[in-house]
Length: 186
Image (cartoon, rainbow, N blue to C red; front, side, top):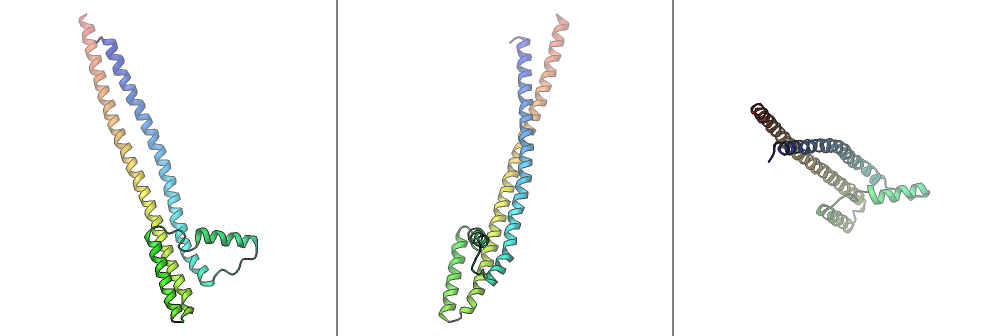
């Protein structure tokens, strides 16, 4: 292969690796931004669930009276759909707590101790909300671990590319040294 073609090939490799490094750096910056946003929203999700725990205890303790305005109807519908204890639970815990609540309430009713049913509802609701909060915290943690793993992979690729660029720089310098020797002998 002639010297010009060798030189162009070497330059092309250096350019490609350098562009790859720039793209990886851009990806890393974007991942950092996404990680920051995800951490903030994850914290918000955990705190929102933590806030619902005492609020649901209060609501369940006093009970929601019949709604009589459009606003109250909307609030009640939103509460029933998204905030009520057990609505955010997923998996076997939801079924287990629901069965436990029903079994205890049925037993209390059978023994004519119905005045204790609201207390059972509050305690089971507290358990449901606590489990929901833990599920959200675990999901946030899993997401944080996943983005950290992606960051590690990108960092490793950046280090590999930097080593490759340095190696190409050495090859470039060696090539120029060879060309210089050839030009002196010609």
